[in-house]
Each structure stands twice: as C-alpha cells, then as structure tokens.
Length: 248
Image (cartoon, rainbow, N blue to C red; front, side, top):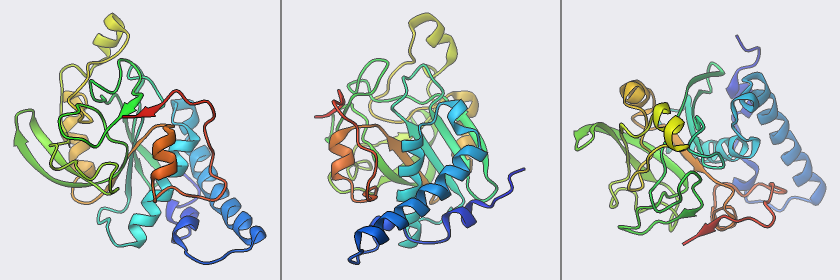
C-alpha cells in the first residue's frame, strides 16, 4: 500500500510548461521544484529505480500525461504506460502504472522497430515504411483482431513526431520474438516494423488494461525529440550531453 494518492501528488494541475504566462525566474523555479518533488515521491514509493525506469522517462511521462489529461484527451486517466527506450531490449522496459492506486501493474519486455537499432533503439522516424519506432505520446484506441491476433490501435499525439502512427499501422500486438529465451541466446529480443510488440502471454491482459483512451509514452534521451516535443518542455528539464541518439 502506498501512503499518497497519485492524483494528490500531481495536484490535479496542468504541468508547468502548459501554462502560458510570464513567470519570473523565481516563480518558474519554484513551480518546477514543486513538480519535481511530486513526481520524485511517487517514483520512490513505487521503487521504479530498482526496476530500471529512468527518472527522466517517468518525469516526462507525467508531464505529458498531465497536459493531455488537462486538455480532455485522455479517457482512461488512471493508467500511464511508459516504454523506456533508454534501456536495451534485453531489459523489461515496459511499465504499466496505475496512478490512482500507485501500483505497478506490469513490467515486461517490449520491442522497437528493426531499423531503430539492434539491442538499443537509437534512430526514430515518423515516416511510412521506415520500420523505425516513433517516440512520444500516444492515446490508446480500440482493439481488433489482425495479422498478429489481438491488437491495440495507437494514435500519435505529437505532430511531426508520431502523428503518422495510424497510417503506418503502428499498434500494440503480441510477438513470439519478444521473450526472455531469445535474450538468453542472442542478447536482445526480436524487432518489429515499428510497433511496440509485447510477450504473447501478457498481450491480452496488458491491452485490456490500457485500451480505450489511456496514455502511452515511448521515451528515449533523443536530443531531437527532447528539443522538439511540445509536451515535455519543463523549465530546467534534464538535458543529455554528447548524445549518440539521433533522429532520421
């Protein structure tokens, strides 16, 4: 059991970057500090550091989630899902978080696009037929049965970054190449055509939890994304230096 309700930690407020007023330097610093304290408390209570989820991924995830929620774009508003592509695919880098209860519901493997890299996703694209992952925030849609069985449609919410997701058929689906046995043999899981594919054993449970209007965030410390996204622009947000990550 967690002592603090996630909604209380967020304060039911729009994120700092979404409030278009002219703060003084001291006011902006104080607002940023308050947001940091809120997300740090929740992050620590859920022991997410020990599971490998970076604080940056979690902070940015909450930032975008809060902004989208305030804009009325999220219907399933107690769920935040983060795919942390700062981790290699050999790690369990998909985190499904219940913000209402403060519980981690799922932590498992997730694939990246085959042209985004081998074990690490380092290149990203919004282009058709790029077979690369697209970073950023998505809203989950409805389910359907397709080529890969039970699948979940994803709508990219960031113009020029992932808003071609529907046209590219970027969906969440099961894949046999996403499993720990392959990691033990090859050192990394298989790759998709750009979809965040997950283990077949957890596919239905995860999709049924996050479907119909929840927030999904695909994160990487990619400089192009961090400087282009309009959803993560917190004052003083952490910046990566000498990054090897690129956008193509």
